Image (cartoon, rainbow, N blue to C red; front, side):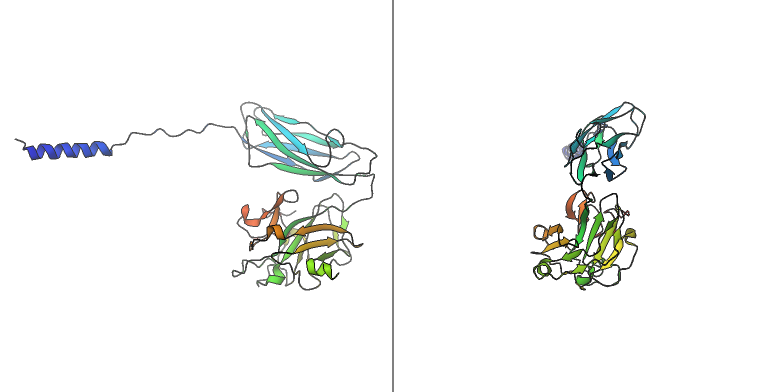
Length: 317
């Protein structure tokens, strides 16, 4: 015969057991938004006279239905005036890619080099893989050739933590030696940079260049020139042309400084204000995407603090 105490204890035990029970929760099933879509182009520069490039849309996996990708064109060059291209690309069911042609339109206007920026606008049946954007230049044949030199990466504040700041790869950290700038010949022809001069703000004021590019410096199309402050640059650097500052110091301050690059005739072709990015990053600033994008701190998109001579992902130019 159960006592009142035993009955009460059993009731409390049952109540405790019931309070600990959980209902099975159905797994959350995410809707299938379709394959990831990326954009690519097989050239970075084309000539105005009959030049063309292939613009491709690529899928991460095939789809059972067709996918339409609408494109957005911007830049100095105008569609249907300076070039022609389709406004959308349709990838048939079962296929992984399709492409269209960007074709330069010949005219007699002196326009110099004009850029085209192409991005994904809308996708029907898929989803954009991050932000997809590519660029293309049309090189005018009615005006004298112009140099299209791009500052792609700059390191003015190397990390002073052990060898984290050893950008030139010589096994020694030295602030003035590991500073560098990375320049890209963003054209379809070789450029001669002989006699070009690199200044910081104080050097420009005194007309005393921090670096004078030696005679015979020819940079091939879409290739890089990296100028270090000094040291003994060690490594392949993606096959880039490597130089050391002729003054022995790039002298790039972390704040309140200006990088200026002049051609052999003294014309300013690049001017970079360090002040807006003066937050002591202990790493480089690089364009993302390379050549075309805005500057960001290098570790925003990769674990590395710099990539002299290579793209942000380590691939050679």
